Amino acid sequence: MTIPDMEALLGPGGPIARAIPGFRHRPQQVAMAQAVAEVFEEAGSLVCEAGTGTGKTFAYLAPALASGRKTIVSTGTRNLQDQLFHRDLPLVREALGLGGRIALLKGRANYLCPQRLGLAVAGGQLPPAQARDLQRIRAWAGRTRSGDIAEAGLPEDAAIWPWVTSTSDNCLGADCPDFDACFLVEARRQAQEADLVVVNHHLLCADLALKDGGFGELLPDADAFVVDEAHQLPEVAGAFFGMTLSSRQLLDLVRDTTAAHHQEAADQPDLGPALDHLTTAARAFRLAFGVEPRRGTWGEMEASEAIQEGLDRLEAALSGLIGALEGVAGRGKGLDNCLGRATDLLDTLDLLRGEDEQEAVRWFETGRQGFRLNRTPMDISKVLGPALEGHPGAWVFTSATLAVGGSFAHFSHQLGLEDPATGIWDSPFDYARQALLYVPRELPLPAQADYNRRVAELASGILELSRGRAFLLYTSHRALQEARSLLAPRLPFPLLVQGDAPRAELLERFRRQGNAVLLGTASFWEGVDVRGEALSCVIIDKLPFAAPGDPVLKARIEAVRRSGGNPFADFQLPQAVITLKQGAGRLIRDETDRGLLVICDPRLLTKSYGRVFLDSLPPMARTRELDVVRRFFALEAA
Image (tube, rainbow, N blue to C red):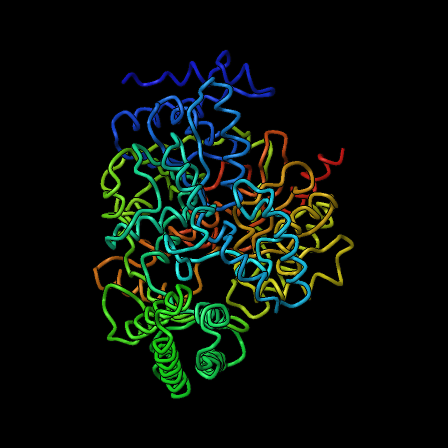
């Protein structure tokens, strides 16, 4: 098959330029598209970085559609999936005049389950707010064609969703009485028949993990795979190739068993005592960790007598429920499903409590009310690499932030890729004119006790110059909350803080108000696009090294050390560089944007590794003088 000429498709006189008003020819976009087309033809692997504004979405969609090969495109989030499928893909497809079939496929929890909707309606025991949402869902269920809950007009974290969607645990599969009306089955059928399917990393990794375990397939076989926002893939994969037991799984089991018992075996001895025992055991186990949320190693759990006693009670409660469910086995598919789930959860708990091993790390995390017990692979490349090889065909991994100091060695090692083709296409934006990097002179090292206060004082002065219009990105929730208490009395601008409202709502308010200051942590460092004057300043409190007390990080550092590597240079530094690039990337999102990037951490200039960070940032002007910052914003005001 002839490799499509991407200059002809994406060039100044090409079909996309003619069809899309305002489309701009970018040589970087054409070069990336040509590299993608060649990898598709060779069935090879490509790891590439495309700077902000390159137009990487069109740079992989155009060759994917033009190739005629069955392609799966995976994005980082469901929101990006929707944007890609409903906006970008139709534009490119129509411009190229191609009529291939396309499909959108999400995980099962994103689709309305008619069977569980019926159970929720029949149950009639929901709190008033959830009961009102249930009525809205019933009305929407009668007119939706896809069953995608993103269409329903309710928040994605609404409490009603677990009642009317399924999980892999509670889905009845082909035994479901509503199987013929299943929206997920229909979505998967369309994906099997489509020429291009848009998925997300969670679904891609779930499919890879299932195939690795020798079970069924979630995704259709394809000739080519494009992984966008690929820097997120290693972390997502770690969860899917690991093991988890959570309080939510246990309480969902209690809820579903209660409903199934009422529906299928109301005349049988009550399961109530066994269900109450499991509920009490799960909540008591959470309290054994203390009130405040925390993360820690399995060794910390083993050192606590209270936690070990809680684990014993949890195991006994699960065993008791299994015994009670065995007494009503065969009375209904719902109860039989709950018996299987309870057995699987007990098996998971037994495996988690077993002997530790070198290839995985066991750890826990607690929230305000819940807990998760985890087993995560120590080196994800050892499981992800073979899983990727199990999907023959072309692979393209792309993001605005994959390279560290111009090298893809860190990312390629994480995925177990051997000698992939690589490419870096810099942003077409004029950073030297549009942006200024300011590293203050007067701040102490982050380890000093008054560091957060000094950063807040500095930020307060800069925000006066920028007239608000800023993101303050923090590396921890604790630092964010301290900054809030320090800045709230000082600022004459609207102050928006992560956690006070859903992210989408905070961003909408930030754009609308025009002079707001937004304080955020991890989720605001990436995937956030605010164009124009509303965002003219990004202040980063310190270099984003992962918390040294994180149990997975500690275990991986020790594993690198045992293998003779340098944990800091081989693992911690590359991860921090990629995170900083993401945060800095929030500032300039358009060729007309103009803004100030402030990195408060003096280690950027005083430590030898600071050069790696600097070399990975866009080529913007740099200063250490506040007067230069003052003139930068004065010029804008003029």
